[in-house]
Length: 476
Ligand SMILES: Cc1ncc(COP(=O)(O)O)c(C=O)c1O
Image 1 (cartoon, rainbow, N blue to C red):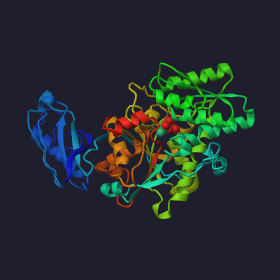
Image 2 (image 1 turned 90 degrees about the vertical axis):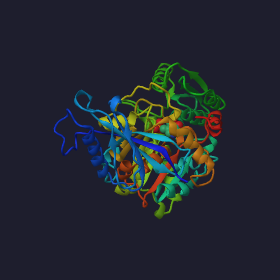
Image 3 (image 1 turned 30 degrees about the horizontal axis):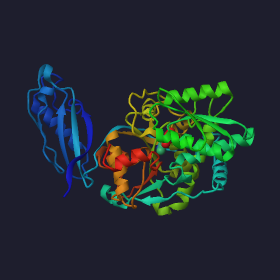
Image 4 (image 1 turned 90 degrees about the horizontal axis):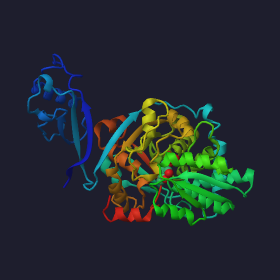
């Protein structure tokens, strides 16, 4: 039995914009408004049955009779809507039929950027190149404990979403640290030590995973490590860094403030700042960190057959370093045949999406911390932005309500690929994929269909074991 009302999407419709017979904005009889909504919805190519309801921005004319529909749309508006009461817009909700009844999510924003990427641009060569990718691969794959991380096929989910296939690159086992970040910070420390020796202190701000990589890398290299965390970072994450011998200072503010404090402390104390974000005048260790992340792409190229090669990559963004590296890795190896890069952020921390909308880096205020703690960033990384602003075609945001169901979906094995352990920050791409594949407009805009081959980057496992256990037990 299928259930309804599980996936929602909202679209604002201006009832006047496509009106054929609307005289002016004033005095519209309700029936005309209703007819107009029907007109607009019929323009949308409905590929499968939907249920929808609608309401407008005047509470007094909010009663609308929703009609279950297949390919035909029929809406009845009730109530008075004339003169000053005339609504200026309607919100239409479309509820998709779903085979994942426990999964409820809300897709936030969607910004599409027209891209026709050619070869990897010369202007980006100084950031990452085929040679620097080879060097990082050569070095990191020689470290004790190195193994390519697995790819799982989410075949059940793919058939449910009517998508060709979905591959999930699972970064949970990466060097026993639980996240892809092990590739970046530790690699940058190695490069710094090559030039400055090991009698140094490295430092950075972190939401947890980058700091764990630095603490581990510093211990392996034999140098000291000081980490700055913000108020929202869990004690479990703090202790994981301390277990590798790092000194961890907690500040009162948010992630962006911890980045500033770490930079200031490094300057004052002569420590080496190994930040996973960048800004004008500070790019170098960050560039190496991103180069380290490109090993994920190299492994994927080895692991997938040409028939499975992705048409789309859904990758979550904090400051954009991971997304930029994945985009660059495919772009450098495949030129214009690179997959389409879809960047996904929490609606509570949409700095990349807002920057894409503005066409330049935009800072956002983090008013509330997202449970996807690795993605809680208000400022984009400058060098990641250079890449994403040229190479990424879509920027989506997702609501918090999707996180726990997505973590549980992977753990249950119901998506296919067996039981997968994914932390909160790992599932943003999955949430966006499900929500957009089942939303008619976005499915079309993103070019998702039965021939699509989707790659998800599962960027972490249960890096906060207590939070993970709460979710698995049914919490949010
Ligand atoms: C698990 C996880 N996924 C994704 C990200 C986002 O990476 P970036 O900040 O490079 O965009 C982070 C960042 O900490 C993370 O920890």
